[in-house]
Amino acid sequence: MRNIVLFGPPGAGKGTQSEKLIKKYGLTHLSTGDLFRKHLGEGTELGKLAQKYMDEGRLVPDEVVIGMVEDKIAATKNSHGFIFDGFPRTTAQAEALDKMLDSHQMEIAGMIALDVPEDILKERIKLRGKTSGRVDDQDDQKIQTRIKVYLDETLPVATYYEKQGKFTKINGVGEIDEIFDAISEVVDSY
Image (tube, rainbow, N blue to C red; front, side, top):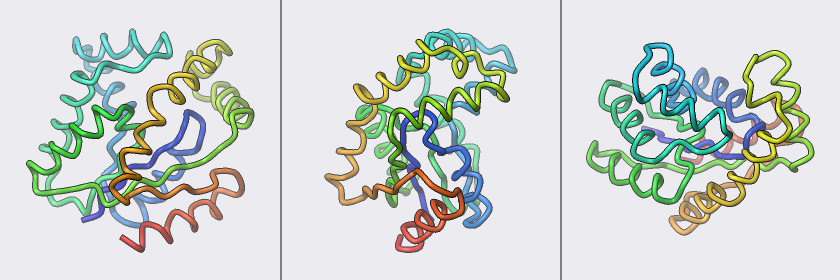
């Protein structure tokens, strides 16, 4: 079973690469954004709370996110593994994820980080905002806040996995298929 953390700042291409990894390796996609949208669509209290934080460009509190993730893992049977897209976002979440996976006799095989310069991230997010309809992809201040939150609060997660020998950085700039080939080489090594 391959459990992979696909990592990178907003706009790095995690969603695009996740789709390709799912298709190639038969992984189950676990995106906190998808979980939030599911709860939003169902009008749950967790969904409303998550939306408030997302609209402000801030991270959703750990206890909300971890509860959603564990429900998804417990409900998914016979998977070839999970691809964690946009999670964990803090070292505390990474520690909780490891503990949770251990309780299901699983572990993270590795973290693959997409490295993209900030100016390119901003361009990609604004371009995505034109087609996605996402409010947080269309506002310069919210985009800047999301990147700052990533740098201040999320980037330390890479160090957590690096200390475990499970971290690989991939250049996230270039042709989608070239980036995917580089990611696939890493996944094949697990």
